[in-house]
Length: 429
Image 1 (cartoon, rainbow, N blue to C red):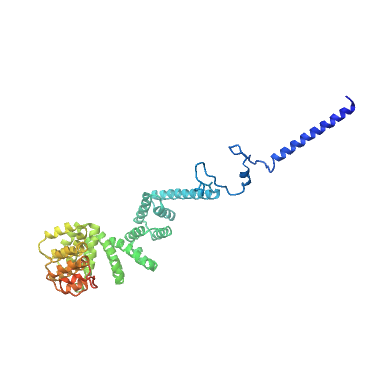
Image 2 (cartoon, rainbow, N blue to C red):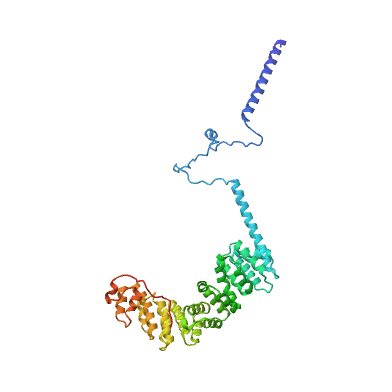
């Protein structure tokens, strides 16, 4: 081979190698366009077809592609990937809640086991547990420990105010306030009464009504003195709560109070009616009837019998009337009928009229018939008018019961309930 041919071949060899190297670099550049360290690799669709359109729309909102056999149109809500920030916040809230509950339960448990006087931290933990513990048992145990502390010999004014502050801050409900104020009145009556001069006016009546039965249960005279200094309207509203506490102390104490404050010249049957109903609620009907039977004859005994049978008649009319039927004619029987008919008239005015007509004392009978006809007329005007025409009773009773002047048996054909109906609560002589 000549020297010239060798030179020509070498030149073509260099050209070939250069072309090969340039092509390799170009291919590598095309494959690695915009490629950064750690970037992912694009996986082609499983169909094996080029996903040109998908790549072109990569920056746009994903399109809905219905599955085979599914009609097109607006897609159903599809689960989306969780928002990392929202998810983290949710997790953090859950974690904090769990930590707070765990801390609350641990601190309350420590306070429950503490036998000495409770400090501020223990009181706050127990109040928080009593209001916000997830289980009813946990709430009850915590509040019982608070009540236990209030009954201890070491209970102080500062502890009471710490408890009240914690209850207000954590949103204690009305029932908890009622129990707490009662316990405060029962365990530290002097301080509880003194707080009446400190409490804001808008909370005065609520606190008084909750606290005074607690005071009355341990110191009746102190409670009576507070009650006696109240304005008449306020006293009427909290009277039942005073009676509740006096009964908790002793039924005889409550009874003596009624007799002490009753003026025979201006007798008002309502206080004895209220006391009787409170005794029924607290002690039961049998105890109440035994108590009423032992009262001395007079207006107070009459009111007690009326109230007791009004309660009985509204709940068990058959048994109440059976008891009345077994009684001999007497003031007690008249008062029992008075109470029974006043309560039962709402159920059956006709029947109430029939039993009210059995009362032998004229004034009491007239009052009972007035109340019975009030209800009877509302239930059936025509039947009430026919019944009224057959009963020996002053014609003015019809006007009292219906607000209309009596003009005969056809009176019931005109409608109207009248404007001067008698009270439905039994009145006693």
